[in-house]
View (cartoon, rainbow, N blue to C red):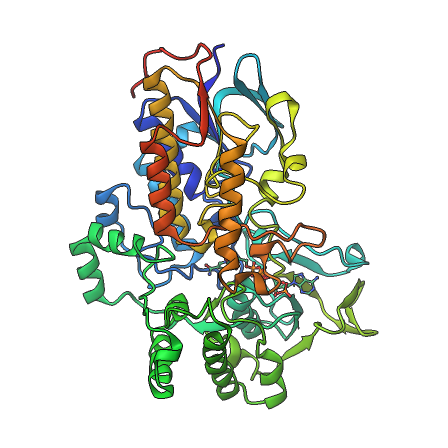
Length: 539
Ligand code: NAP
């Protein structure tokens, strides 16, 4: 059956844009459907004060075009949301992507037609058909706003960090509540505190945060990277998180207390997420982890003047078990006279009232509430679409007890459906931009292979999927990651099954994907339906 496009890509963030470019290079016809009024995904929506990336700009960028890498000039070590969005806009223009992107098009459903082996994708704007559907819907795009009783009764303004008004919000003279203390809160709290009359922070779990020490990119480092960008990328891809976090393989027990202190201090001074690779066993051994956690708690006590506030801000869980945060002046913000910290770990938020937030019978009066309450991570955006595979099977139902994928890229029962950085792939435990490029390249190669072989249907087998899910769980169980209530486990969303979703180990994963491809897409079943044989389109 003839379809409107060879492939439909859902989402125009980093993943969808590069997927479109790759499909075009390979001669496939494609269209991107995007819910937002602009491109950029995360960087289109997350416009809260202080929003920036906590992976360094030189790495949090595409590598598919050496010219683009050389030309683009990042101004800061950690780029702001607006600079990243400018970069994405530039990429879209430079590679003429916009003509195949349809904005303001929220996909509501997609159905696989068994007979024709094609997909029908539905949005408010009608139905489009394609042989392949590629979900580029993002890992952290479906916002989570807890259902606090009385939420709708609040008289002031409410904002979620991930859906920030484009015109910005002026908090001058206002009393503001921030609910949550994850990465988004930690970035926005210092700026909101500097503007608002008063800021009340509602903290359920304190987070470990490492200073960013942001600033202009060191010109020498920039020269070095641009002198051998490919080498920089290759070296980073070989590191466990696929990012330039220098790996010290020494175990904590092999280092003297002085050596440990020196290592932690130097990582703290360097700033950023590389703190987590200070020793080889921080995510494997509780005692080792405790030494790093103690170091950060000491730093908090040094920065925060009120010992009781410092104690409340000090996390108790395993460091790195919830994603580490990176900040600019977060802990010091609690020294300001206009900032109050309310601990809601023992006494949860009871309700939102017309005038504020009620905890333990006390209403904390505010004029605005910022929900920095995170996302229905990894599965939320996929579950928001009524995806129906072979025989009308629903993805929501299939994943009711937790997501099941083969390599995070395919799922049994859903032929010709690909997921970019899906659950079961390194995704959020790696540098996202190289991770989406790796997936988009792999998917593109797979489609080209199918075409060359005269095949037009591909589906992960249940056996391969079961083995992969077991493997993902086994790897996670060797680490300390499952030990706390993180969004990696879905634990932040009430009722979500507790399953560790990302795959740990970017380099091993890439090898596995390459091996699967080299072995004729081992673990996938392929068939011919009739589309095959058509001459590839070239643009
Ligand atoms: P998050 O890390 O999930 O943090 C959500 C916060 O809201 C947590 O402190 C959570 O407490 C709290 N919360 C949730 N429900 C609550 C409730 N009912 N009552 C009280 N508190 C509640 O979300 P996020 O900060 O938006 O970050 C999500 C991820 O996005 C990050 O981990 C990171 O991967 C990414 N991100 C990256 C950057 C960056 O690159 N710089 C910036 C922002 C976000 P609990 O911890 O107790 O659940």
